[in-house]
Structure formats: structure tokens, C-alpha cells
Amino acid sequence: GVHAFCPTRWTVRGEVLAAVINNHAELLKLWDWSLIGSKEEEMKARIRGVQSMMTTFNFYFGCTLGEQLLRQTDNLSRALQDSSTAAAQGNRLAQDVVKTLLKDRTDTSFSLFWARILQRKTTEIQTIEDPKLPRKRKAPVRHEVGEQDTHHFPETPKDHYRRIYFNAIDTVTQCIATRFEQEDFKIYVNIQELLLKSFASEPCDTELAEVVKMYSEDLDSFKLKGQLLLLPQTAESMGFDTSEFDVNDLVTFLQSLDSSRRKLLSEISTLGKLLLVMPATNAVSERSFSALKRVKTY
Image (cartoon, rainbow, N blue to C red; front, side):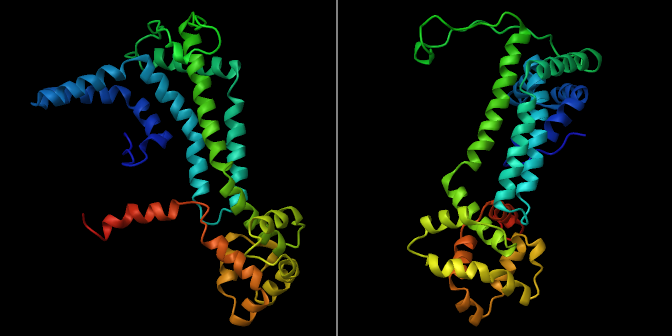
């Protein structure tokens, strides 16, 4: 059946759009049944509006394209919300998703997508109208680029929807890239990578230089370099396996340091505090607010 829409973020669920398309005929029957049972004229008008919109090719094309794009972003969202995912790992996951989406940004991929949705419209969803060109509307002068009267009007419906297809992919990929290009996030990645690479005894000169440059007033670079070399031995003596050290192990290690080890690793403790007070994701806090109504009534 049709999936329940998320009350706050329903627009980012690809499976919801897929369920709407898969149950298109049943939903149209539901609207007919609702018109018979509804007595309020305002509600009837809203039902007719939704019913009319669902038979347009724009609606069908948008739902199908949204489902294809959000299928990738939904997987990315689930992976990023995992508490064991490091910031640098999340950045690499996002880059992989962007590359996957950009592979579909070709004329060949669009032609296959166009042929597939037309075939499904003909065989499964005959109630959808045929694609047609929208009414020509010239853009305002303030939106013109370069010389005036250069607005391009597509010659066929396929050309019109090809532009929408490419614009949708560009918007999604740019939004993902923008999230991970923020300076604050790069600082967080450097701190996390510096500590994780130190535990694995890997070279981390680049991350060290960036962290010291950012927190020159909070950290003593001379002490920090020595303490980073001491990290693997300290972790092993405390029973940690440094060969497979992840973010959760890092947090556990920092929280389990006794007073003497905190003095021995004073600069590392400062880095740990900076790391813990700058969360890489707000997913945990958002879940807390979402679940608050189970404990606290309005």
C-alpha cells in the first residue's frame, strides 16, 4: 500500500513516491469514493484538485524522477546517521553518491529513462495524460543572461523534460556537495582524522598542521606531536585494538582516561573535548525532539 508520509521530512523519501506511482489506479478510485462520501465543498474541491493533478504527465514524470534520485540520497542519509560513521567516511560516501548520480546526467541515460516511463505509462498507467509542451512564457528581463530575446523554447516535450531532468540532477548533487564543503566541517574532519591516523600510526602531518593552525591558542604543538606518537601504546595498554579503531572506540578511549593519563595526554584531551562538543551530525538531537512527545505532552 501507500507508505505513511514523514510529518517533517516527507519530501526526502523515495519509497513514498514509488508507492504513489505503484498504487496510482487505486488512489484515483479512492478519490472517486471520497467525493461520494464527503459533504464539505472545500474538501471536495481539494480532492478534485489532487485527482486532476495526478493525471498530468508532470506529476508522473516528477514522481518517477524523484524516486530515482531519492533512492540514492535515502541510502546516503541512513549511512550518515549511523553513529559509527566518521566525518571523513561520510564525506567519501557523499562523493560516491554524487558520482553515481552524475553518471545519469547524459543524453543516453535520459533517453533510457524517457523510454522506460513512456512504456510504463502505456502499459500500466493509461490514465496519465500524454506529454505536451507547456505554454510559452518569456522570462522577465531581470532573469535574462546576456543579450535579451535569447530565451530558448524547447521544440518537443522530450526536450522540455530533458532540461528538467538535468536540472534536478544538478540541484541534488550541488546540495550534497555544499553540505560537505563548509569550513566548519573540514575542521571537524581534520581533528577526527588526526586522532584516528595517530592511533593507526599513519602519517598525519597535513591534518596536524591544519589543526594547530586553527587552534593555536588552545594547543601546544610541541607537546601535541609527542603525545600523538604516544597514543597507540597508551591505547594498547588499555586493551584497545588500534588496528580497527573507529569513532566509537575513539570516544570510549577519551572518556575512559584516568586522571594520570589525562595529564600525560593533556593536548589529546583538549582535542577530544573539541571533538565531542562539535557533533558531525544533528541526527541524534533531531531524533530526541521527534521522540519527545512520547514523554511530554503538548
